[in-house]
Structures are given as C-alpha cells and as structure tokens.
Image (cartoon, rainbow, N blue to C red):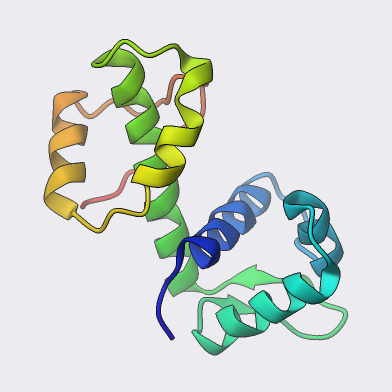
Length: 136
C-alpha cells in the first residue's frame, strides 16, 4: 500500500495528539478531521496494515515506531517550510500553513537538508512549535 497525502495527514495529527499526551481514538479523530467515524476507522485499518499504527478494540490508537518516525519527518518538513516561508521569503506567519501543507509531502531529502541548512539549524517554527530534529 502506498503513502498518500491523506495517510500522512493522519500520521501527523496522531503524532501531534500523542505529543500533547492526548488519547487517540476514532471518535477524536473524526472530530479533528470533521469526517465520519467509519471513514476514520477505515483509514486506521489501512495504517495498521501498513504497520504505521497499532490499534485494538477499546484501546487508544498509537503510532508504531515506524509510524512515529514518518510522522516526525512530516511534521519537521511542515514546520521547516513554514519557517523558511516567513524568514527567507517574507510571508506573514498566518499565511504559510496551506503552502506548507502541500510542500511537506515532497520526497526530496536534499531539498529539506538545504532548507534546514539555510535556516541555520533553527528548531522553532514561526508559531512557536518545536521542529523535530530529523536528518533528511
């Protein structure tokens, strides 16, 4: 099963919930994404099959170690891009999220290494969130 933007968004949101020590459930994710519980359940099953999530009845949904590493990478890309757009390109912080949402899915380690280098290895995005330390 291949990665898609939708699957990566799930991993990213689950990661953010886990970092805040919030229990991840189908109901909670349906609220986060504004979609039905059955849609969330179907995606969770796909991500479990990909070994990116673990899930059991009446238990919290959790990232596997592989899922967590992929999620950290996606979050790092997103936050690095937001910082780049603000610091280098002069965008206002409130105008960078949607652009970063698209760029975070690019599979180009050299691109993200260069962005990280240009930002002098800074570790906080323009919204005050930590940028996970990832070696691209």
